[in-house]
Image (cartoon, rainbow, N blue to C red; front, side, top):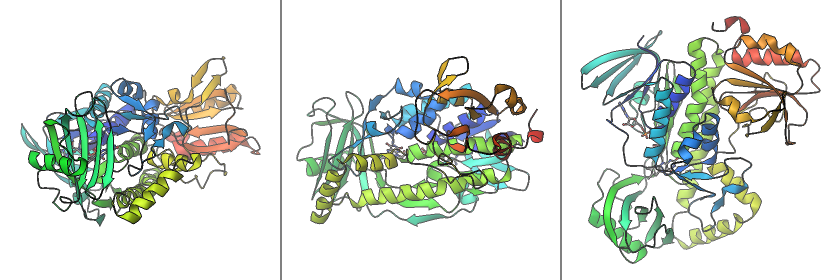
Length: 501
Ligand SMILES: Cc1cc2nc3c(=O)[nH]c(=O)nc-3n(C[C@H](O)[C@H](O)[C@H](O)COP(=O)(O)OP(=O)(O)OC[C@H]3O[C@@H](n4cnc5c(N)ncnc54)[C@H](O)[C@@H]3O)c2cc1C
């Protein structure tokens, strides 16, 4: 074997997964055809749940230094913005940062942990057998074949891995296309924002920085043009004029592109030793800025499970849970982008509906519900059927302030920096937990909560997964808590006798 895992595609999702695997000590290599990170950034937003998971790994602060924090998001560009500050999180904001910057930070992080990134190399074919996967590649040094135990297709919408894994990509073709342009608009005051829907179409303009604006247009006269037809400067200018009334002083254009609302999802995210994550697993209209965000969250869900399979401690069901856990949330994501797309039509009934929804979102509970969906704060997984029921099972962990036995105050996310499981004990005597010390991927912390939290009052102990979701919590009324903890750890972290040396 050349590597334990090969990731085909070094976009944001490939780099994040490379970091997660390297963090767990996996020998991982990213195959990327581009010589360097593309300067053309599709995504501009990093949403709250993504900031939370990056915070767990100590990467959030590196990104924040480069971008702008905003407390607002949007749903279908409705007149009322979403207020993320209402979210119950220390990351109750979105980060405005071009995708190229996010990718660079994630690549640096992965490299610093020991991941290998092979650029200017294209994957040509993928073939799996019982023991591993052969990946044929071609680069400046010619063609060769690499072998690994697993391959993940982080290779975007036209995924080679998806095709070679014989995984279907079900859904609908684009029914319209939109135009994207990053340009200097000298008639606009610096940092202005413009959003308008009329019978001529939709235009949304936001500043990327002091000089460049991101312009998105669905021009009713041009919406049937194929995604593959290049956008010309004249077309871009005419569409700006049609939708805003002037060319806004259009000068320098940095990037022009066309994208559509094709909506598809892979039938399954795993076939044997082959996995899919990010755009290779799902595509949709980029409404609400969610695609990259969910891809990064998938990398967080898959990394530790794959590492566990390689290190030999992961139970069989754990790898399959990647598909089971993520697929339904991405189906919901596809539906929410389709709903947003419907709301972009400027017909009188839709305009009426937009105004109704904009009014409804002003109600705090309605804002919370939609904000939690767009920001992925509402994501939770099915409770472990083998664990005693508890309302926390499967939910996300928020960054809780903890008081340690020695009086030190620490936040819960800081214990997830190494990507290990975290057993938070509120009642076990330290001397009784020595038996768990043999798990190199489990950290045991004896602490108490600094502030009261709903659903946490009766918690005796809680096992946090490496991706910041709660595997199980057991209550103080459990008749035999030590036995329940022991069984719960063995189920999630592998049997104590199988631990790696
Ligand atoms: C206009 C627009 C705006 C968007 N805005 C947002 C936003 O604000 N927020 C958000 O979350 N999402 C947004 N998205 C979506 C986001 O850009 C994508 O979801 C994200 O890029 C997916 O990341 P990925 O790593 O899965 O795939 P990609 O970014 O497509 O990366 C795949 C990589 O694989 C490489 N590759 C492919 N095939 C091979 C091969 N055979 N061999 C070697 N390398 C290969 C490619 O070169 C590429 O680098 C937007 C999309 C569009 C179109």
